[in-house]
Length: 256
Image (cartoon, rainbow, N blue to C red; front, side):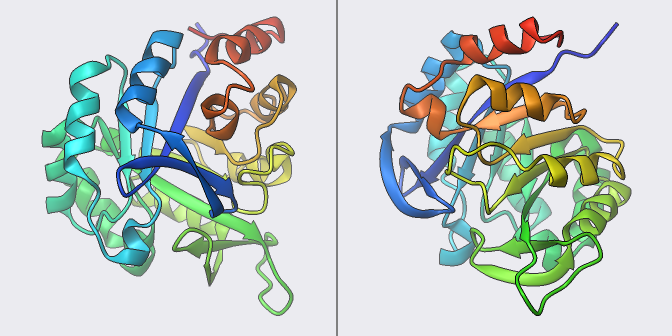
């Protein structure tokens, strides 16, 4: 039996509000995170992801109160990331109601953090978020994609495809691959990047960045990803979770 393709709304949270911009800039207020989470739960979302978009750059921990409030009102799994630096941070988020925890900047600085979390809580808890962009001039990588940190504002010189493979080897239970170039543009997912990472990782892969039309989700799904994630199109009413699932189903994909 085929595993159902998941549809995941993403809530980028800054100072207690959901925001959305283009490539993490020009942020617009999109509403209250708990209210939106409740709406997406009712619409049939398979999971909900919370990302504190300024936690790493501002040196703050993810707001536990928001996670707790959402966990009390929704019945789908919650993935929470942003500012996670230690096993203790993960434990606090799990106690607050998160089902999975995303790590990014801290894992790049100390890759063994991935293994530490997986050993303590199980690989299924660890989501390694990879914010990647096409290499700018002067920073070539073998795949042509570079890992960034701090909301795409800092290049690392790391090859994004190789890093995704290493993260899986170190114990990540899932890779959330976000195209910084496509993020918020509604111009479509970066299919080339998704395909390159799909070829080297066996763990579940989540496509993120660029969704604008139902067709974009279908194209991303054809790369073999396990989940499709979006923000703007859901927050501002362009598409509903149900419309995306209908399109995926019509294209022959198994959805819940």
